[in-house]
Amino acid sequence: MGQGDATNTASRHIVITGGAGFIGSHLADAFLARGDRVTAVDNLITGSVDNITHLAGRDDFVFMNRDVSDGFGITGDVDAVLHFASPASPLGYLRYPIQTLKVGAMGTHNALGVARAKGAKFLMASTSEVYGDPAMTPQPESYWGNVNTVGPRGVYDEAKRYAEAMTMAYRNVHGLQTQIVRIFNTYGPRMDIEDGRALPAFVGAALRGEPLRIFGDGNQTRSFCYVSDTVRGIMALLDGGDGSPVNVGAPGEITILEFAQLILDISGSKSELIYQEAMEDDPQRREPVIDKARALGWQPEVKLRDGLERTIAWFREKLGAPTPAS
Image (cartoon, rainbow, N blue to C red; front, side, top):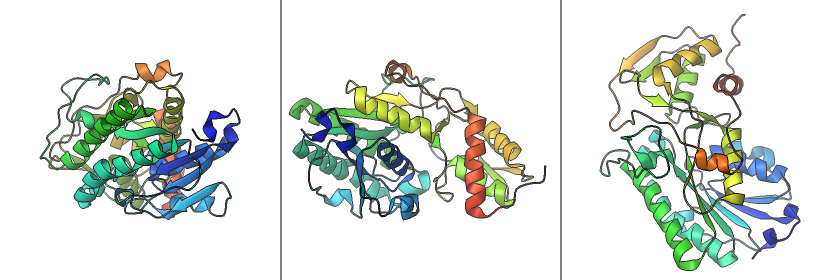
């Protein structure tokens, strides 16, 4: 085993695939803040060097521009591999459907291989999308899901479901220490404003004075977790999970229409709402059961309005948008 077995956690080496992505870069910050060394591996098809520019030049941080689907190697001891490489937004996986499937299959296999070779822990980033358009709400980890394998979302949903199966196979066959986190809608600074997800799309439109587009009737629900809470949940799972999948997200459904109106209120925007045809296979309900995560000592702390105020302020600065008069 690597240096993570020692009591001095400052010497641990954490590898994060997708480490230049939204959540991956925040994870890098969190591990570095507690004294770990981090290697971020990313091919930047949806990640961005802007997310990790502030880490450049640090002795405890290394960035590798690699496609993990093609394989990658790490020099020296490794204590944990966190596999976050994958397009995660609808625009991302619709633009790169084959790459999404490959990183869920070959990328997961390669990342597991690195963990096995190094005797490291392995944590796989799964998603609430494995539940598809759920027939039950809220969704516990025991729910097997309702996924259209050949629909437009199938490339992402099935890539993650396959990755979960591969992760469990390595655990069962090779005795690898593995964890699976099913991440529900996460938001915060460093989201790509052009990635097509509801929050950046709504915030971008609101700050530019453009209409906010509601797909369908707006009654579909989501539950939003601030990125710092999600990161804390992932770290708690890495250190204390039992190997079975664990939901990390914030209970409390809000309709997409209510969410859009809340963003208009916080941003002070006068943008209008317009309705468009519903997206195919768009899940109608999304809310996690988080009893298993709570058993690890975790629960979300940041209230939705507080998190949105921070996120909108970040987007406002990034876009150079004026602050509305009070």
